[in-house]
Image (cartoon, rainbow, N blue to C red):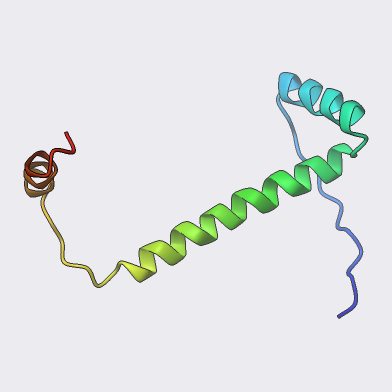
Length: 78
């Protein structure tokens, strides 16, 4: 599968975040683009994991907050 060329996007960053990215870029020798790409990829992967977990648990019976609290207390969790 051929590698697609990168797409250009305009992103407006908080000045403090931009400064932190510039510093990290200089320290790690990774470009700001590489750092942002990695952070976005990690965030999207976490979202995908969350969505998969929700789908996996969709058929579980619903439990009220009060019942969940009683169960946690009964098992010494709180």
